[in-house]
Image 1: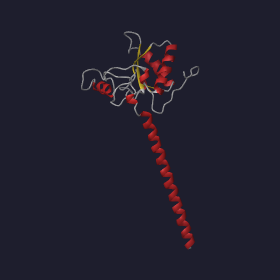
Image 2: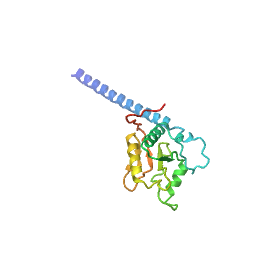
Image 3: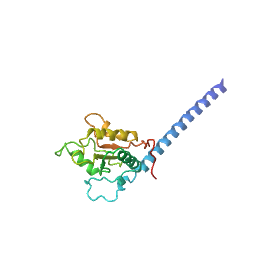
Image 4: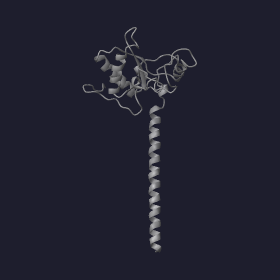
Length: 190
C-alpha cells in the first residue's frame, strides 16, 4: 500500500515535470520566433538612402524590403508582357508622410486616401500603382481589375479586393508571412 502511494506520487511528479518542460520549451520557441521577427525588422526604417523631405513621395523599388521588391518586379514583368502600362507611384512612406496622408479628409481638406496610420508602406511591404496613360491614371477599372488578378496570382494582397468603402485599387502589399509565387514560365531573376 505504502509503495503503491509512493509509486503514484512519483508518476504525478514525473507528469508534472514533463508538462513544465513542455511549457518551457514552447515559451523558448515563442521567444525565439519573436526574436527572429524583431531582427528581420530592425533598422528597416533606417535603410532609406536619404530622405530629404519626410513628406516626399518615394517610388523607388529599392526602398522596398527584399520579398516585396521581388514581388513588385515580377508583377511589373507580367503586366508589361500583357500590355498593361503600369507606373509605380509610391513604395516606402515615412511615418510622417503616412500621418500627413491620414489627416487628409479628416483634419485637412481633401479626399480620404488612407484608412490607417499604421500602413504597410511604412514597413516597406507595400506599393501603389497607376495606369501610365495621362488622364486615365485611376479611372480604368478593367486595368485595376486585371492588375489585382496578377497581384493575387503571385502572392500579393491587392487593395482592389478589400471590403467596400475601404477598397484601395492602386494598393498592393506583401503580407508578413506571404511568399512570392512564380506562375508557369516565370522564375526568379538572380
